[in-house]
Image (cartoon, protein in one colour):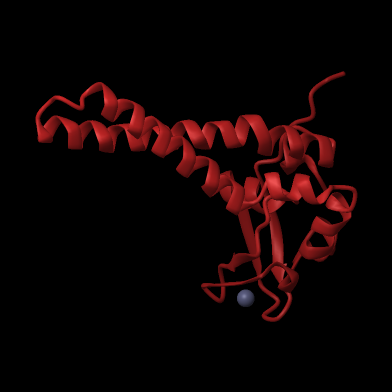
Amino acid sequence: MPEQEIPESRTYRHVKCGNDTVVSGQPFELVSNPMSSMEQTQCSSCGAMFPMSDFEWLDTGENIRDYYTRYTKDATDVQHFLCSKKFMVGIILIAAVLTASGVYLLVANDSIFTRVICLFGGFMIGAMIGMAVFVIGFANPIKRKVCGVADTRLLT
Ligand SMILES: [Zn+2]
């Protein structure tokens, strides 16, 4: 089966002002992902953020809130939680604190300067590990299972 080509961008319309905004790159990945728990997005004409329900996809005319509901209607509460920002922040914090503590133990007898640098470095590295665990271990596989595609930019 040939791989479907992932679209570069998609356009949504802010219903209240009637103007269109093109999303591409990471914002497109986020807005297209029904499991991303996005609550607001930008209208480029108004220059402000509005609730997802104020926007519709230009190509299908479907309200973005309805689009999210349509793709996530079979997702369980646990799946929603495991993809949520709360869970993401939790994993990042736990990984950051654990890594920083581990690193700190290694340099506990060194100078205060070394300890502070290592604590900070450990925290940052741990946070990155936590983010990777969240994306690779939870958000991506759950999104794939719930939405049926590896990349939600393919959804219409
Ligand atoms: Zn607008």
